[in-house]
Image (cartoon, rainbow, N blue to C red; front, side, top):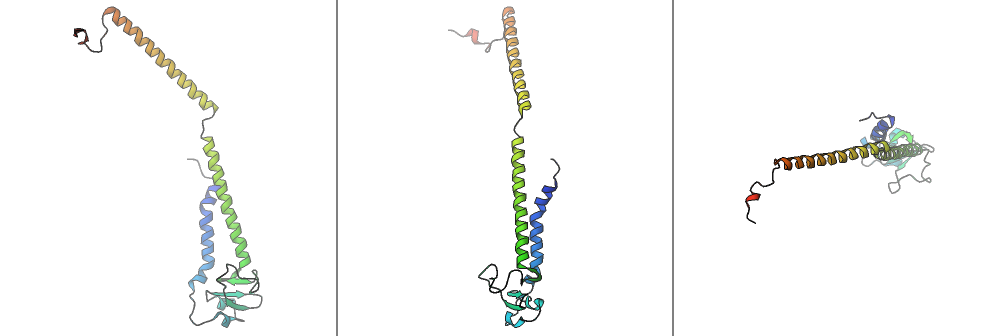
Length: 180
């Protein structure tokens, strides 16, 4: 096997590293359980860390409000908070940066997959025998055929000599005793 280049390592570790990074970003949010009875609006005008202790809360950095995350939508609507100011899970990552980062990671993964497919297709095409290999195989087949012809010719000559001197062995030695 040949050595793997830089792309092989990128493809192999790109997706797991991206998934691990996302997991580490969102792990503090998932580790904290929602305290029963505490509404997100109670943490308005407090700190981002206090608001995001509750996993279902969304912190808006512009007006320092803490509100329930709109679970019916994937992204919070602009009427609730701008993406560049919205925080969920951790205070140091906003939704805008998260979308950009995930787009870049997704693009890199797609590029890596496309590169692998291209390399595999090129390798598969190169497995076809080239002209020199085809010529060598043709010559080898011609030599084999000539050798078989010479063998058959030598066998027939030897058989003629055996018949001439009575040394020819019949297929069935009892065949000459049969009554026809």
